[in-house]
Length: 245
Length: 222
Image (cartoon, rainbow over all chains, first blue to last red; front, side):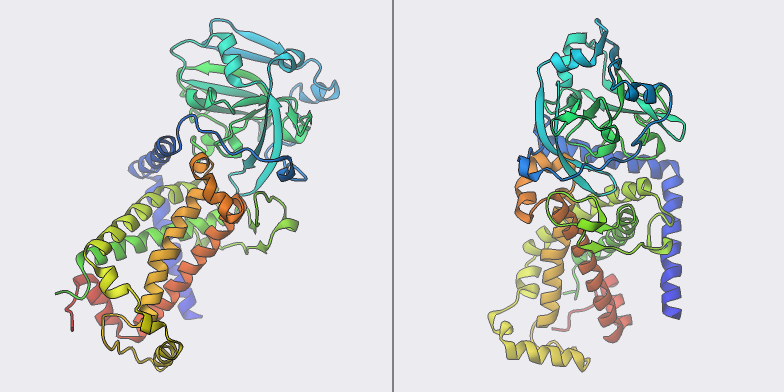
């Protein structure tokens, strides 16, 4: 038992030491640099335009788990849900020459892309589903995004512990062919659990990037003044902005 | 001639730091979803082949549950771990350490020879006979350097969605991402198992000399 206590003591000491390093400025800057090296390595080795694998219908998981917000109760969301999202609007705004306000019908009438992809949660689990919706590039081109825009921010209707959810990607992922604004899951309108009526699909990154309950798409030059400045709800709470690892 | 080359000693100690940080932060990550699956998908306990126990704070980095911080450590230390392993393999092949000391000979695979070696180990007789390492040592070091450690890098890449466009063939080979994730855990514990046996045998075979030689290089008896 004594040896076990020594081991536990050593483990705790080491772990506490690591927390000290992580809290220091140099420590935290090297931790965020490592995230950047992964992003660059992935884009160099796999390619910027490379597609995430798409699966067969047989691979679709029998259930698509929801995580984070699964039934938002804040703001006008319950009312929209009761109306079957008939009055839902998606805005495309920010650094664009031609801002858009789209109804669900507008979105359904655009050219659609369907893809059977796997959703990987940062926690470790995966589910497979078929998503359908217009490519984000279509909306960005229609809105005429300006040169100076470097990121696309996704605004969401849901709140987690009283803070609105949001996410962001760079232009490489925004214009990626598999980045779609999904309104169907397995051929049916999105369940509330999975982000009804609209959610993003950012197929080469982890689940928290795939913003649900989408209300607006915003082209911006910098993420500094948005939310906590880290580029997303979970990023503001310490998670990596590049979620491809 | 030193007993352990400088490249071996540097790699050995730096690799130890990487493995310890990766393992302890990995246990924290494991606490985020304590179920392992085979195949392409898996999200519910009823589909799991294993429910992993929750690891207490003294075993994890940081020493409280934080998926975000544990991932920061894991993602950072993956770099030196993988690059040092690559460096060690290049060094081992260039200085013939692998060919001379770690390669097993056909005669050593004979069941009676293996049996003899196992019995000698059980008697705590670590006389090597000819060559630097006996058969069981070569097998253990060969497995760790050739399989367990590289598999951690490969299965780590295999569960990164950003690498999947380039690495999909390997993921298909093992049956899907959740299989990759299961293998990542299995090899991590295989390395832990090696560490326990390795430390135990060092303690039983003259720990002071063994530690000294792994730091200073020691002198080759042969």
